[in-house]
Image (cartoon, rainbow, N blue to C red):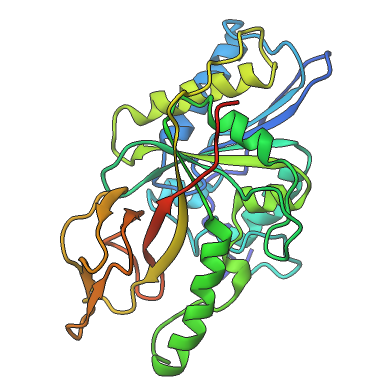
Length: 330
């Protein structure tokens, strides 16, 4: 190992806990700590694994892989990433340069062995749990898909009452905007690769599977590990991997569609107030102020999603979402 080899900084090997029933069934993988400072999934996965190992929880069918710590380096350092965001531009590479490239080379083949992914996350600003789902069925160029009904059915049974879609379309639009900014702001470190929007769920869908991301609450919320734990059990029941009734679908799910993303361009860019995820904003309302005094005004009535006051220049700062039409009760 050379001094510049990013694997030399890894505090532990990659680890997946794998269970297989003799009875056929779905192949599910559950991820925790894709971002190292998001530990609610880790705690929930450890709890489920302990219950299976003790016999308190019985896998009746199918296969289950549990990954309590997907990014060991970021987890050990208690921060979002090691060298870069693992949940962006996720793909195997023959020439790994950053630590997360090595994670991807291990993780991507593992994802491809499964049919279903439950990815457990948390977020930085205060807010309530919600689930990210993929696109509606489509044959388009950005994210062709044919399992929307399965994702929607699972989303309704995770124990939350808000769902968000539109991730990759919105990210692609953000990349197009960055191309325009790059000509005017060559000093800004803007990622112009549209593949940068591809994370765990997008990669899973590209292999023919389906996936949801559950945002279990704010990073330090004491309730977030319980949200993650209940979601794992509900997923196991819904997929019939354990002998338990199918959870009752959420009768009043709110669906929002991501439609806009704004990047932070300078360290002195600042929010107009301490936004929380899903705070409403009215058209013309000031959301933020650029370092040169230029106000950023809401272009339409919306909800602010993932406001990140700690975003690095060149990275996503906040998203806007509008009401969606999906997720009728299934």
